Image (cartoon, rainbow, N blue to C red; front, side):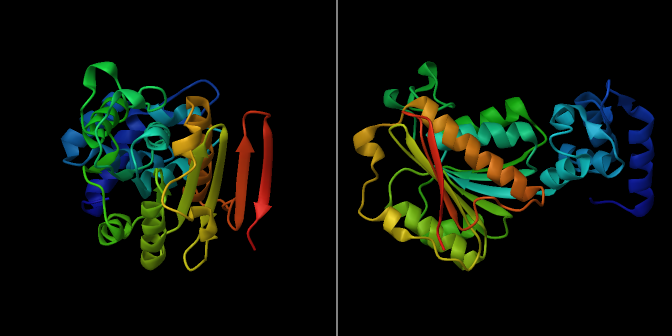
Length: 282
C-alpha cells in the first residue's frame, strides 16, 4: 500500500476506530466508511480494504465469506490479480463470482458483441443492449457490483502475443473461451509467461475443468480440430454456470494459497445423468 509508515499507521488507527462487529463474525467496516477513508487518505478503495484486512478488520462486502474463507485468505484475494480470456458464457459467470468474492484486480479480454443467441446463457447479455461490446458490459457490471475491484478490459480478440501481454505478471489465467485454436494460443501464452491456467469447456450438458501449472504439459488432443463440440451440442445455461462455478472455486482456492485440487487432473461432469469423474493426466 502506498504512503509513509506514519500515513499507514494513521489509516490503521482510523479503521480500528470505525470497525464494528457483525453477530458471530469478525470485526468489519462498511463500504461507505472505506470510501470515505480512501478520499481522506488519497488512496484507492482497494488499498483501504487491504489495509483493513491487515488490521484484522473485514470489509463488510466480504463478511459473509467468513468462515468459508479466513480473513487472511480474503486478504490474499484482495491482493491478487487474474486475467480471464472470454466474457461470454463461462466468462460472464466467472466475472460475477470473482467480482463478488473480492479478487483484487481483473483483466479480461473479449472482442465480441452481444447477439440474441447469447441470451440463453450469458449473464452479461441483456435484451436492451444487444450489439453492445462484451468488454464494455463487463466494465459496467464490475462497477455496479464491486467498485473496489481494479478493472482492465480489453475489447479485442487477442493473438498469441496479445495473450502473452494480457496474462503477464498475473497470479492466474482463466480460459473462458469458445473455439479451439484460441484455446491453444492461450495455453501457449500462459506457458511462456509462467502463469497458472485454469481451463473450462462445455458441450451440451457435459463439461470439463483442469488446472495447468507453469512448465506442465496439457493433453492437447482435447483441443484437436478447429471447432469445439459446443458448436454441435449447444451450451445450456445450467451446464455453463456449473462449469464456471467449478473453475471459480479452483481459482479462489488457488489464490487463497490452497493446493489446486485439479492440478494434473481432468474433472468431467455430465448433468444429463449427474455423473462426475476425475481422471489423472499423469
